[in-house]
Length: 543
Image (tube, rainbow, N blue to C red; front, side, top):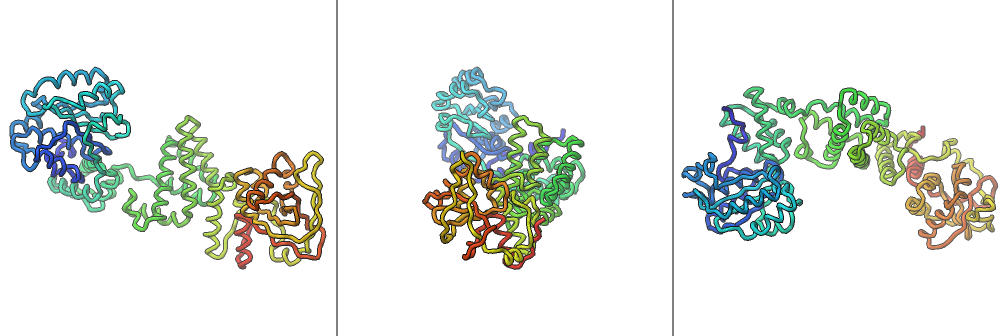
């Protein structure tokens, strides 16, 4: 009868275990010197050799003729344990035997001496699945078992074990097997089985397995069913790695701010029974790959993909800024959390891609930094086109900036009269010299106090005249908005937090004239970048 590769080539001595030399060397030395613990705890991810080492250890402590701490695998005890004829070695699955009664049965059995071996060994796999009552029933026995009993506990989730269990065991942490060690082992198995595997296929299988030797051999076993020659294309087909075009298309729609295209792709995928949670997870992994390519020089060692897909990732990553990629991952992770809460999956994905494709819909600081980074990246090229969606809400663009600056009359200051019930905006002050105000810092402080007001004031500037701060903005709604509710109070609080002084508020009016030229306004965020570009002579077309 055919036996799968991971069972047929399961290590029988410590030296055959791949990638765990820091553990196998210690265990072999303990057996060789006779300094054995009564309880061992093996932890690590799946397929790294925990159960295999437990079985080797159970044979080694009972072997009649051990060799350098390894079982000989030839004596009657080793062969009896290997065939399952000796019942002194008990392997228990805690996932299905996790009750108090199961542990009580063990406590009764350990009082009997072994029938054929020196030690009675209990291997408890997935021990984290035991109930609280079962853990409590095991405590005293695990701390002081009879001299002829050894416990070997194995788990993939050590954080779920009580501290009282951890303190009673000698712990060994199994590492993920490196791709190089996996490829070497699989190459050896291929030579023994008589089939050929290319180096690219070995490397791809090792990266897909993600540190699990058992997963790697299982995938290799699947590939052998298609022929005696295994290449990277066959591995991709067997592993289901084909068909990533929709991920690149969705990312391109986000980069092009084409929400309609993104919704069309989602609708098409939904019609083909694509699970939206899986799609969200795949998109997170897709942007993660773009992030790796963007930040790591040798990205191929960290990605699970073919050479052609790697080139696609490199090409697409050049169209995104790192800030944009991180923002996409953050928003998709929020969508994943919402999907797990039970919201409509398709609607959540559609909302998420609309937000990704339309930057103006979100006004948080993370999105603003992302948009600033995009503009800076475009400015390095010498020219860029900024759509109206990229700018915060403000008045429509007027004449050409340079011409407007040349023809603008000298401005005077006139304060608008506040409503009778709103004393936050003060009466007209006496005219005096204007001073500069760190308005950009005030705007940053305002994001902590009143985000809607920050949106209204975005693109504005301000100067100090005596005891007044005069706000200059093209937004026609500012006058009514700042006199509503606590808006004026929040602006004054932000100014005081930055300057340390309390000022009264007023609105800057350029309709009248005065002898002195107006203070140069200090712009903020995106408007500041556009202004700098125009000053440098760079063509900026605001659509």
